[in-house]
Each structure stands twice: as C-alpha cells, then as structure tokens.
Image 1: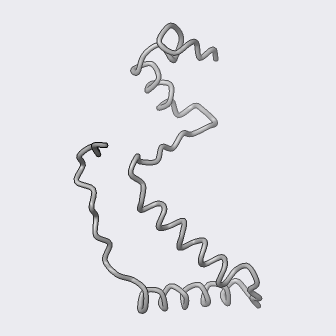
Image 2 (image 1 turned 60 degrees about the vertical axis):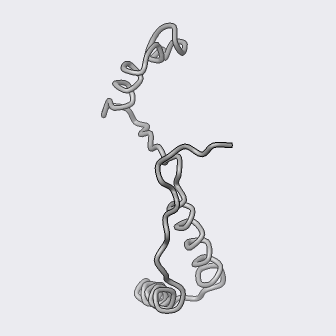
Amino acid sequence: MDLGEKGRAGVLACQASRAAFLRDPGHRVVFHYTPRHSSRLNRVELWLGSLVRELLRRGSFTSAEDLQAKILAIIAYDNHTMAKPFMWAYQGKPLVA
C-alpha cells in the first residue's frame, strides 16, 4: 500500500486516514504507543533489569517450577523490604521552561 506523503496525499494526508489505517485489524504489524509520561514503564524496566542481574544471569535452575519459586521469592522479598507507595507529581499540566 502506498502511504503517500504527510499532509498531501495517501494514508498520511490527514489524521482521520492515518487513524483508520492504524486501526485496521488486517495488518500484520500492530503499533503500540507509550504514553508521553511513561515513568511507570521505566520503573518496570528497572525492576526487570534488577531481576535479570540478581537471579537470571548466573542462575541455575533444576526445573521451571524451581525458576518460578525463586522469582516469587524475590518478588516477596522486594515487596517486604523495598516497596513503598509512589507519589505522583505530574498534575496533567505542561511544564514551563
């Protein structure tokens, strides 16, 4: 399919045609957009990185159940020792420089 040129012709001509194109379930590629203020995703990435460093990188597991038990133990430990409420500071207002 010819996408055209942004603002001129084809699918990219206007927002409505772009939205219709991206919502079409017949495409093999699905687009997922992250929010502009995706700090919660950054926290998940940091936690998964620490899981890899602490457990998976040099871990030795006898079975899938063993791996699951060790991951659940790390989750329980983190929840008990390190978890605390996250205070959202963003008010939905644009930042002014």
